[in-house]
Image 1: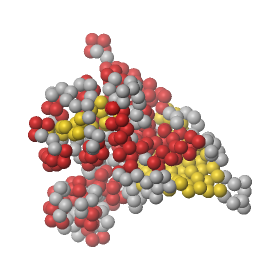
Image 2 (image 1 turned 180 degrees about the horizontal axis):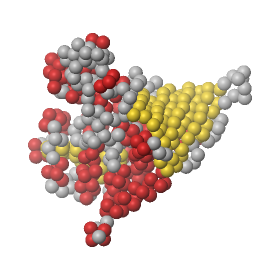
Image 3 (image 1 turned 45 degrees about the vertical axis):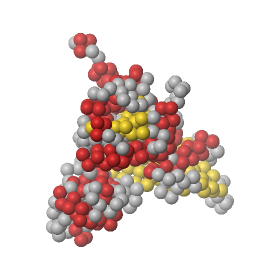
Image 4 (image 1 turned 90 degrees about the vertical axis):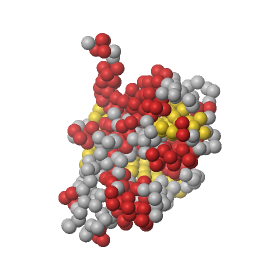
Length: 430
């Protein structure tokens, strides 16, 4: 099986690595010459199959079985639509697109062409969330009534990716709840097995702005008089973890000298209080699903580590989960405060690899679907199953900005009308 890699950044390379040995990467499309060359060397790609522009690759027609699209958010739509036109199956990094109309259009095009589009909702493939899903579906605790779910971004991850990095501005990438948490919207909809009915949301950019900069600080970290006392000092953030993410994003040269040279001019050497970021650093969303389940979802950059926690309250008991500890606690309700509480601790099978094995599970699913002879076989993160999470994330951001509660059926109808109007032939529109 042959694949082409569109976007040779960190996520794309992870997916390409997990494709081996079942598949061969036969082409790389990457505008950054360093990343393009690194991928070419890693996968043995000849010069005639190395491209800076995706248009040059598509001019060859269909030369392999499928493409992995892991470029920046706002490049996904055109790259995916052109790939579908050529008949390519696609592994598509999330978000599908920051635009809900573009998301629905990719779904339409995939169904029209019969091509498979599998979205990188890797959390569905983790043993942690799969075990929680199994417990819920077993019915041993009765119906789910309400859920508290937290995505704890980690303050250093927030500073690196969403203040200094590629996803710091909505016009360059996506709103935070779309880029970071369409994963979580997808998991919630999957766990409760229902579409969302209404969503409200609140939050904003509370901390990473100039008014909170230390007195005497400068635009860049190197040479800043306030660096000694600042935990976001780039030297503190990157030098102690040379050779690891996110230091590897700053420079291919992971020597101390190489990193310091990069921080002199790199976006990652900027003061976190004086960047051009505009995405939220905290957001809370309230979700009511059509089957009556209610959810509070908290997305925050103000945590010490990156992890997810979840509390699921059911008719006859509750489930507490912490994916950083790979620990699920099941409590069955007692009749009174004196009775002994019945508790079970579950530690799902540990799986090596990113996202607790979710990256490898996703790629295995993708390759199995491509190899399947059965028409219509659907991945657990197919485009048809993944659109709901993106509309939910869009609704949460729109609710946050407008202060209104989003009625989901009404919003979906509005989006469908807009898409239909945009795809009408010009003469018919007139």
